[in-house]
Image 1 (cartoon, helix red, strand yellow):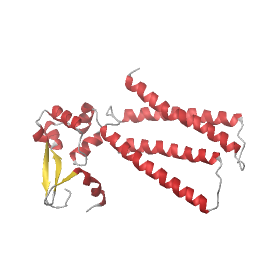
Image 2: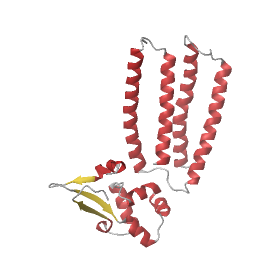
Image 3: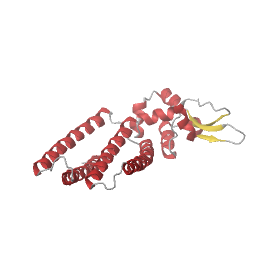
Image 4: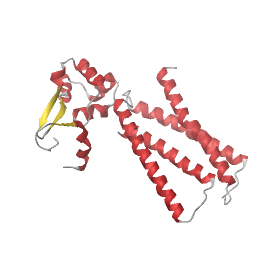
Length: 141
Length: 93
């Protein structure tokens, strides 16, 4: 296995493992919430992980297809890193701004406590959107 | 001025007495003279085709490392490719 391929696989796992761990925690905490839609059972966790694993494989195939489609031209370079740095700064500002706005809105609506399940859901949304945003930056810029 | 062009203000070097200096290049001109495609150049220099396009259209100034790689690849002296252009007005092109 080449260093390039190993790095690609490790990066892919680096992104996907937290998604799995976070996803399972999300199900757990959503199930524990007072006004929970559903108390998730072991089968739900199995389904979630199975669909996730299939998704990861499809994602890996798609990535390989993108690499091949590019006709051996590198997918990223110094300009990509600059774009990603700019994206990180803008994203950080965006997250802080939206979080602040959300917090103020909740406060003015009289919400005094937030269940940890919602925090997990919020974190999951941020995580997924961040990854898709970064992928879009790499592929489109 | 077009809204998108405003983003490139960082590429300009303002000078005393008005006007600004901007790094320009002749990468496209020299590349076409040699009959090299953007894709081929991207493969050889291990950069993206979009970066070459951005350099050629003066929307991106390459790092010193990449600039030296381009010089080496096209086998021309620095002053033949990269140069500073003085602009007195705020027109971008």
